[in-house]
Image 1 (tube, rainbow, N blue to C red):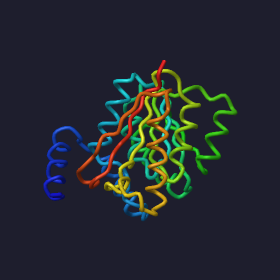
Image 2: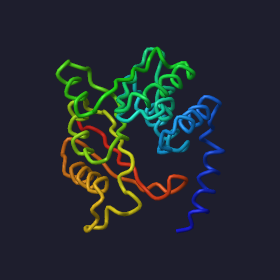
Image 3: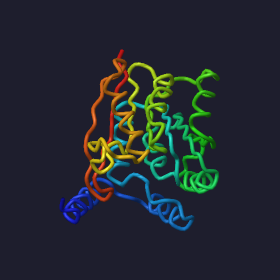
Image 4: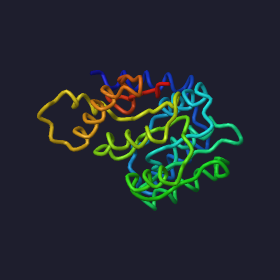
Length: 222
């Protein structure tokens, strides 16, 4: 693969459609300064998520994996003034950085961060009678992706869009001998997604600044 070409095309698209203002650039810088892993979505992917949220008319969004709040800002900006975005983050240090970025984006009135393991927080949301979400974005630790998907369904309604990032892992999903737990996790998720009759779904490959990966996208059936 010509990675240099892919990155150049990604930049071309980003320059046209994925403009990062000072807030988004500042979010990336803040993560670098806090030594948070540089694993946020790209600008193009952020714009894609924002467009999907707008096309779906989303008023309630759930995000699994806040990191420094970069994707949170893209998603939050798709919401109406009375919208709500709940984002779950495992690390308190990451959540602290994200909160400051969310405040700078002027989204703190509609964005809430909950800190803790998602597999503990998600059952609490269901047990507490949380209203269904219009869109759910999964971009957290890969091993329990299949479990995240099952909980996402419990927090969905007909028409809910569920998107999961990093499900191709540079093509390693094709390697039956791969022992990487992250790869094994997304393969379990991909299979569960394909077999679940409650959703219509597919996966598309992504190639660019984030190298070779893929996103799964599903719509909960009526």
